Image (cartoon, rainbow, N blue to C red; front, side, top):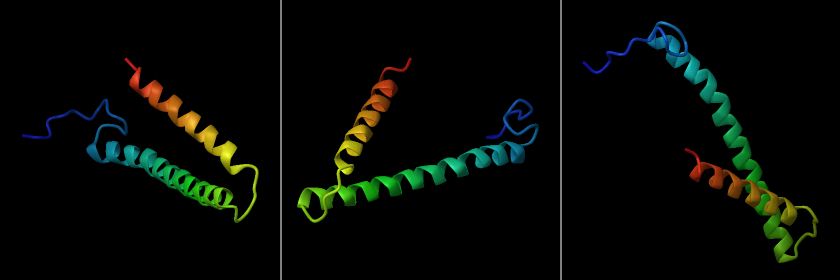
Amino acid sequence: MLDTHEYRHSWGGPTLIGAWAVHAALAVPLVLAAAWALRGLATLDVYNQQELSGAKRRWWPVPLSLVVVFGVAQLVQAWVSQR
């Protein structure tokens, strides 16, 4: 039998449906936040292309890109060094 787990101590209570409901309630907002962040990164990329091609001059896309790269580097470093 594949499903021999006892769900009394799982998130969502004593049933499999409750556990799935709690996990879905946590996952849906995280997926929406990730989509929103991806949209923001795509917008930043468009502004960087305009800045570097000389089409429009804005001061903030390149420094913000450096902050994003630094944050991603910190995340990767923390992920790699976790125990």
